[in-house]
Image (cartoon, rainbow over all chains, first blue to last red; front, side, top):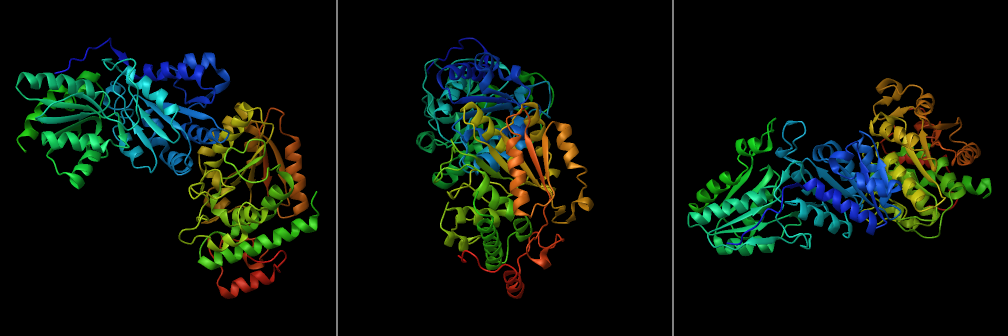
Length: 317
Length: 281
């Protein structure tokens, strides 16, 4: 199988920050907003170079979403950023009415998503944000897997007209996608071709899926690994093509199984090509404090859990 | 200045439009619409600098955002009578397949509307964003917004009020329709708002009070006074005292007609108090 090399651990939010620095230099319409989390979102370089294009709104996320919507009137491309919990659940109605229903070109950029936020605990570990955002008509939902992909995704959404939810995380994780890989919204990436099982993964779980595939190969199981960075619109063709070949699927995400990528895929498959499926996701529960590694283990979100799920789903074929 | 009588004719015709629109579908919000008629007629026909036609970005013209979207009947009538869309389209208000949704939206492509509103408390933030974009674009034009007084119970407003003052958004004129009524009763009984002028001033705004919010001359004077105070480092607020249901005697001084349509007989009485001026749609 194809080998992927970790080019050095880095956090996905730094990929966002690096792309914002680049956009500050290349796209004069890009503006940034933040709700008292500049350091966490890694956008200080953008602010230093473009102070007039940055809006510090304070701890007032609802106002931030409204201001972002207003800035689009006049041709700006606002990147409104905060922690995923405060950028979605806290301001759902503001996003729904002032951004999604109003067709505003706002980029909601959310760090510290999921359980790998770690020690801060469940108040901050949102595991429902993909569901909240994907249910909004017209909203594009993207969850990149590493530093390089987050940077590429951030650059790509600046050139896309329409509301986007870009979800990334806090911890330093493996950085393994090519630095020059073009990011195509809505286009799944085939990471490893296989014949026995399809593993689709998004966000931090992609690296775990690749490790799982290696372990499975040692057991004689040929796993196809697909990176679905865009949860909406879903690359239905890529999923259908793969399961028609393998006959079973495991979906992997750092999110509740209700409302997540797995749910989108099961809906697709139920309608078009019923297929046995296992879900690597949290099971309708809140998180808790701990290190990211401990939490991934406890909540069944690591490569070990993926291997178990693959062996289980293959028996359902 | 357009002749006062001409503006007054638009006011009366707008009131007829409002009453007939809500009567036709037996739903909608006549009370606040009737109360803000002088304000919106003055704003669009006398005060704002507007380009011909409509484009979303609105560069090189003043902008208006309706935050209390439930008074869509007055907004739609004023926009139609100003030429943004055919006056006959007012007859489609709240009907299936209409661009005139119950609450204003950009989603159906209705010219004149730049953001959806209806879920309360969001419009001031949007207006601030548009005002910031104007500053970035070097556009000297102003941004106006309208808010219900009851709407100020939504916390997002106070985030916006704090932001606008703290960041010297001085190309913004936010008007509060201080009619003292909301769906469940007088604001003083539902949730007292306190001294709104003092509250805005304490947050750092420049406040203009208009005691006669249903007197066209007073409204125009207040709006012009507010305009004269822009560009001086502070956002400007107009406290506009209006009477909910103004122009229809049995709808005034009560919250009863906030969101209730008149029946056939009540419509006839209401229209008789507002005789045709420009012609019905």
